[in-house]
Image (cartoon, rainbow, N blue to C red; front, side, top):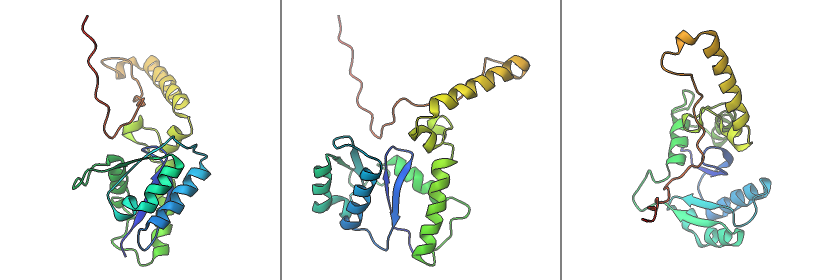
Length: 192
């Protein structure tokens, strides 16, 4: 069986809610999205939902629900399969797991696999793009403390064996301040 998987996320890295069904529908998406907003206490007018151009994402029921929740809608460009790099990267990570089967025998088998995968992805998978933090560490505000502890460990290593560090003192990877699918254009400073 194929893996139709609907993912709703609070940030570009952490999967907050997911669901696997035999087919996508606006009704299933509405339930998933509404539950996610309630569970995570997301106030209205806080989110932009970037989605593909599939029927459930373009459905009138979806558009009305998003409007009621104050969610801004954004869609991928037509015929551009990689227009949401965060989702594409997540699916690639999922499908390249050594345990990922060629085929799921049942929908329950797919759900069991994804339950384990998304727990690992959020709690244990360290992303290079977010300073080798896990999605949970970023989401729950632990990144600055962990970054500082890493710097302390690197400083101690440098002081005890400076010959191991030829060019300069080591630093842990930086945590990005913002993440964009399409960054805003930089405006030129006014000429004086």
